[in-house]
Length: 134
Image (cartoon, rainbow, N blue to C red; front, side):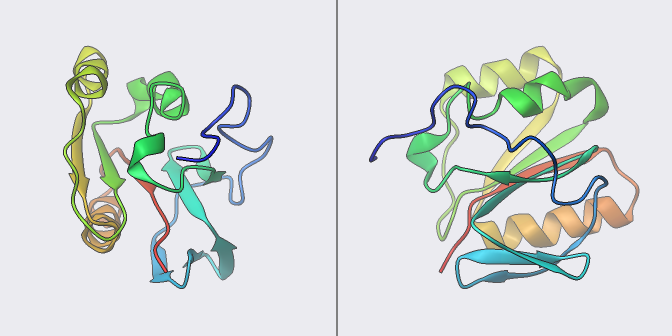
């Protein structure tokens, strides 16, 4: 990992979209949603879709997930799209989700996007951290 996430770098000042929305497509290093295109990873939360500087699962830390923890009362499920391959969430991060309590699942980004869209369409309280894939 080169550099990693620094304090204050987790989210931009304003979301790309100030409400949740289904993800229309992913790949080529980004995502399409609500008629917009974003290059890089995204964090989908009840109050919007944000740019997320996480490029690899090695950058998933308590600090990188703090925006999720801060909004935990508004979530039942949080999905992590871990890139091309599924990934096991370290116990220290899993324990933090249990404290909220928020169910967390790690999948490859493609299945995470599909699951997020289904849960969002069912009006479930869902969020997702989606790592961009090329």
